[in-house]
Image 1 (cartoon, rainbow, N blue to C red):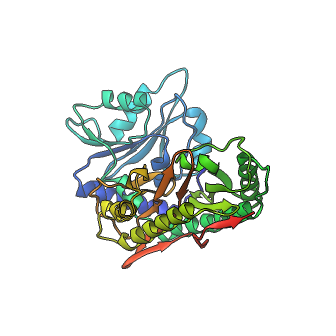
Image 2 (image 1 turned 90 degrees about the vertical axis):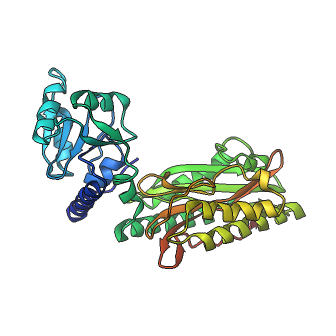
Image 3 (image 1 turned 90 degrees about the horizontal axis):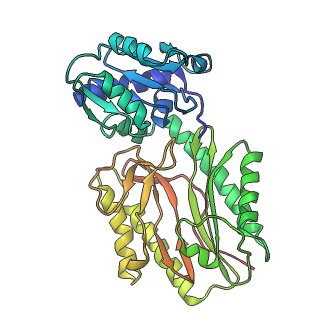
Length: 372
């Protein structure tokens, strides 16, 4: 995934916030690999291959272990110090110097590891430390990333407005004989024309809409088919994600009933989505609505996922999560009902928690898109 450049003032503030969170959680050392964590904190988004890249953060030190051949390009994104290593020498000596400068060779340090880091990078680091106590990023950088700032929210909003236009064009362009892939290509072209790139796209005709993770294929559109479009773009480093469901032709009574139940589930989850609520409160609001209508067994997945630099990131909106939601959290609300061999209906909004409730990023109505 591409990432937008990071304003130095924002990078400085994020590092300060991370250090405060480290102090609050008695964390001595945070170590990140090439990942969205690294990009969010520093603006550096190096190519991830087998060459070790690490960002090491302590209360008073911050620096990169970096392959020498990547230093010049990474330098454009940060003024943090680099500890370069070359292919003919390997990373061990540079890593040792980095950890010494970070005062990280002390025994029993509390270390936070990037959970998305390659296992060989993690073991290289842990083998170089003395009896570390390690955990992952849930209560440090991971937690900070869930609290979206105004700049992030602005970028997410812009991506969703572009997504709205692409999806509206897709529904308006539906014709008998088009394939799912034809519609996906149309959406991709709309993104590209407007300076974005496709993050993902699932065009689901007919019974394919009953597969929550269907991949667009060669199925052709005919009269009286459900049409489900779940798509997102990346604009200025941040993604959009939205699902709308329609019908090409005249929907029967059960399709209309299922659609209405899913809409009711969205409305219930939106009402439950507020700072101080638990993630499970939001999921169960949608889940109980669907169950009460007799379709509980056909809601096959969680209600939602967080969204930021990554399309899927914490907080996860599940029936078992007791995580307390906070102002600034951004996540999806996307209940669905999937009747195998017939059709599926899913409606998805991305929301940000603000004040007493939540705000929806998309401005496209969720009404059934009927054509044909």
